[in-house]
Image (cartoon, rainbow, N blue to C red; front, side, top):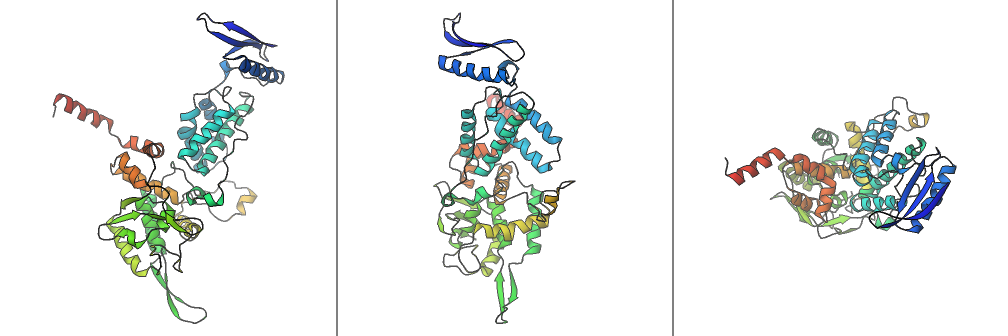
Length: 412
């Protein structure tokens, strides 16, 4: 059924060749550098032929082709539009650029592990987990179609971080491909003005006294959307690092999951970000209403202590997105289990506002190096990996070439 032999090519190069017949009786062969590799393949192909699941390389499709078939299947199912959009972006931006040209029959477990590790260097654990799951679904679909013998993505895991390594950014929707539009952010800021004054008068239930309760949500959302700061950095911002005269915010501190204030994680995280006049004026007004804090925090909890990320998410971002209708749309025919879940799921997290700010910086025409500095990325490579598609979109290639021609030939 299958055999291994040493063969010398016309070039004089020696290879080890596996000769076999597939389940259809057709003769096939494949060459390897070492005898060990050839024997391992011979054992593998022998078993696959017995069970009728062998796919020769010559008839195998690529990962990109398998992904296309999988997406077509998904489109025929009753999936949320936002879910389908996410799947397409996982394939287009992450899977195809790295693995698209690889034939599914040649894809190996080590390749998938490397793919996962490389993705973790530039993306969050949440997004990496989703992309790896999508790759597994693609290979599973290929197996269902008889195009693949084994799903090598099975068992490739993205481990949860330990609590002490927790970063709030990873608990949110972290897809750079999901960037709020200007219309959506404008709606969010306008709705925040409707929902939340900077303070309200409340009556103490025990004493009957009138007390002023500050509400930080409008300035917090505004600062996040305009600066692109991480939410941990927004919560760690101090008045000492806000220059209301020049409209400049200095990023120096962050609040971790234990509500501990500490320095930002890296040297590049220390940066200065300009803010627009309207945000400056709002911060001036908020400073008058802000609860006193020993650390001088701009957005402290009501008792003056650092605020936990989940408080801001649950009391500010979530109700704001729900009020704006920026939630996943219900299915046409929800399951009984889904009808028992009345809570709408927001489509954005704080990190999406960070990506929105980056997209606005790019729209202003600021170059990649400046974007890197404003976003606090450790390398320019990270900036290009995250926002390269936006930077490229902003480039007017025809104008650039015309300028080059004028410079070279002295044309005006």
